[in-house]
Image (cartoon, rainbow, N blue to C red; front, side, top):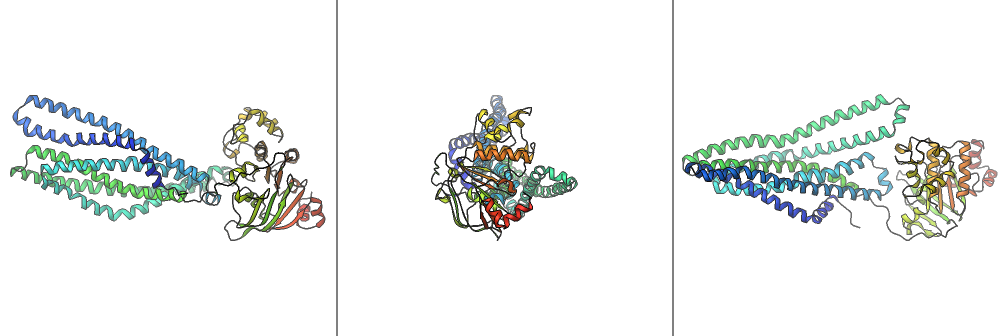
Length: 576
């Protein structure tokens, strides 16, 4: 599949909206024709109508001079409306495609990228391309170019000598802006980094507000934010000053000097009989059109550096490798969980050390299989690999004898109910969090909640199942979040149940009730429980013990205790 890029999206959206673009060009041409014709009416009024004292023509010209600007404004309003629609369509298409891409991007890339970086580019970066560049710069540049051509042609017909003097502004301003272009790009890149760091800082501070307050870090965070504000102000001031320097200094200084020169030379042309007063007035009315085009081109050049930085960031995200697509459907017979096999599996997270090294084990259909070990021993990595979040560097993972690399990831995950160690809840209702991502009847959700000792707690809340759980579920206790996550996994009716430290935040009584629910839920399915607390897996059929990413022991709980190895030492340390 061809990699998506910002340029491809822009071109594609422009092609899809050719009808709108043609309509825009039509209204634009009418507006320009009217604008170019207006100075000629002034010329006729000054050179012919006033000297001839033709009151009838004077009335018609006066009516035209009043009416034409109103018509031009109406046409321009229609053009502006279509222009805004086009720019917004491009921004939204880019946001949609970037979001769709990142949703399917590899976790390795996403987890190594700051959330603020992603948020900034989806919101501000995409908007910058569609709204700021297409709407405010590129399309107006086209209109100003057409206006420039029309005005320049009329000025040439009036007096080519004055026209050449007017054109002197272009090489002067071009050379000036070209020397500052690299500095503009450097400032834009720095300003973009500052905006991204601000988004990341805000996201981190308010996501971790409990930690901030626990360590009395408010003063530290306020000082850090104050430093960001000052840096933002400094770079923004430099950037805007440079933009204005490029735009205002050449046009204001050069325009005024050259207009004075044009007016002076025009006076000599009138004295020599080569120009009329009406010609000079018309010529001077055309001059702002030409310099408007000059300012538009300069602004487009300045904005282009900003856009290049934004597009580079967008293309960097589009370059993230996608998760594996396609594959066969996983078919599992109802009422019986599948077998699972790790065959000499090795994996590392790119840090140079292996999280798993040549790990082999098998889980029988319908077995309750426990995985324990010291922290950092690779327990949760097994869950990540089985979910297809990562791919092993070597070895195979088989489900019912089929290598998961041959399976559709969507199909594989639909058969797995995962209760992760780091539980994420949406800032929505309890019902929506349990039912996610499907629309499930309230009765079915309530029934699942009863099996995880959650229903009575929910019913005691003022809003019951419509209670909002807060950002990341922080309105609930850790134990309540874990029970909700278990409920969500069991409601899926998975063939494989994966529990990654699923009872670590539960009190002894609640854990016992949830353990019973898990025991009932695992009937007819294969269950794997990763645990630090051995009480979670003491009723497992077999337990795998990992040490430093390798298999240390494997057996029933009684066998492992009898061996007096690592499992026995963990068992004794927890005084079970």
